[in-house]
Image 1: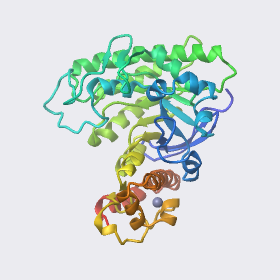
Image 2: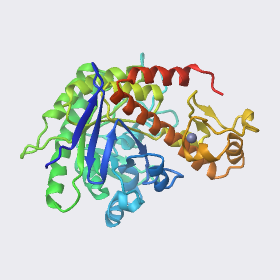
Image 3: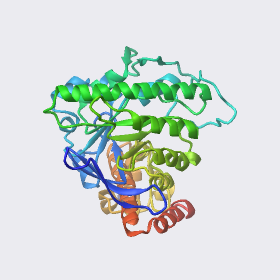
Image 4: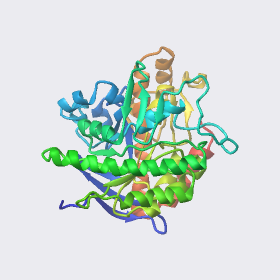
Length: 410
Ligand SMILES: [Zn+2]
């Protein structure tokens, strides 16, 4: 292989955090890195060129959505995800497992409920019907688009992700929720392990059958919910999986239900079980305090749909906290969203104008706020990376979080 896939360049003393570089066929990713989410092969409302300009290093698209439309064979015909969406840089796809399983319980990623008293394996969100059923071999589900029936197995997911052709792909795993019983979590971790074995085997079979294609990296996904023994067992188990000719996973994803207060602890358990020379991706975080916690606990990359999703609902980040730009107080506020931000939106547009765009239901509102929010998170992670190198991580954390959560939002 020559160059190692991941190189560590600096470490956070006494903790698991580090600065490194992931080398992909479409360019390097300097970690820690925030990976922008482009679910359907587009970061909603923003051009790929703009994403590049605002510092995005890689884009993560969703295998489930692209499987349903336009279909992975179309993306393959176009030359793969990056070529299809005109993004020349590194790409990720998630396995589709999360979306498929979410159909199963009808819940969004974050469970906004007190889970301490509730333990059940048959939860359905109010007003939703179960759209997915898990068995030992895979998941049968109905499309959220037209109700048509589909089936994902580890082999199907890897096959789709090979057609999509992203640089980093993920093993198909079972997502559980915090309200599943301990017994179910145990059997689920075992099932995800068995699926990981099949994913790695299928990945190498497909890779060997098309050696001319750019090499994709496969990340195993660690589940185990809030249980330390299950998380450690799951992480360690993935490190033992090898193909017949000795290949293991290229990196690891940390998935599943994570409560905010346990995030650092759980990422720390998992990171300490995983090899230091492989990158670790944490699925689904973007809040400033979570970013610092996750990096310190050993996460190298993370993705989250929130910066663009909340932007479309007029919620914008600033150094002194998040606020809603449609507030009446911004009607005559001709200052930028965040005077300290270096993004295109903040350089050229005022709060009053953006508020007007939202009030008038103009599409440009989503574009301008997404540019700002994506830049805010990417720049913060850039600062975290520089602070680790400079030995100033804790100083930056205290400074940024003190202002973000401490100061009154203007
Ligand atoms: Zn800005």
